[in-house]
Image (cartoon, rainbow, N blue to C red):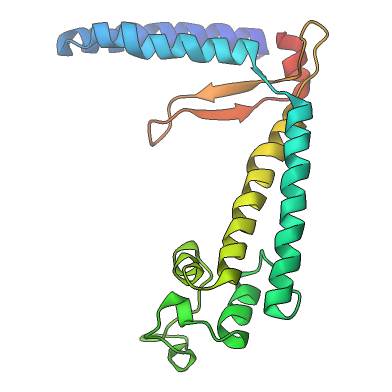
Amino acid sequence: MCSSDLAVVESILVRHLHNKLYLDLVVQGLQQHYAEVEMGVEAVLLGVELTGMGVHTEEFRDTRLMLEQRCKIIEEESYRLAGRHFTFSSPQDVCRVLYHEMKFPVNGDPKLNLRMVRPGKGGIKLTAAKEPLEKLARTHQLPKLILEHRRISGALSRTLNPLLAACVHQTNQTIPRVFSTCITHTATGRVSMHEIGRASCRERV
């Protein structure tokens, strides 16, 4: 079955399902909410899909450069405090520096010590998670720097770099845009936005 035939079949199925489900909404008195709220949101999301989101790439690149520079400063200061280089993205290495070498309270709890750290039932496992680091950051500078490094690295890897990579330049647009497809049937009820291919973006505009 070709794509056009599949689109026809899907549209017929959606129409029949809509008619059946709409009757259920009428019985429950929810048809007005459906028309004004649910379909109103769908109209907005359709506009987002068709027009895309403008991205000021120069500002994004400047911000990325600034954050990368801040990461380097944090790394240099952290290495100085720790007395050696370590891997920020490695929880094992961070735990080794904080608890074994610098003797900070285990997992941010003054009542714990390294003798209590052991595998199995009743044992304590060292962690470099956010909550214990926040406890340590109240009185120690290195955990505070590690947390800041994580926030900046997350902004770079999950926001700035993906948006810059997804930008599409169009001849009829003044700035690059990011096009996505919106999915509303999620388990949590939130809207999930997914990037579509660059070739598909060019076909849609």
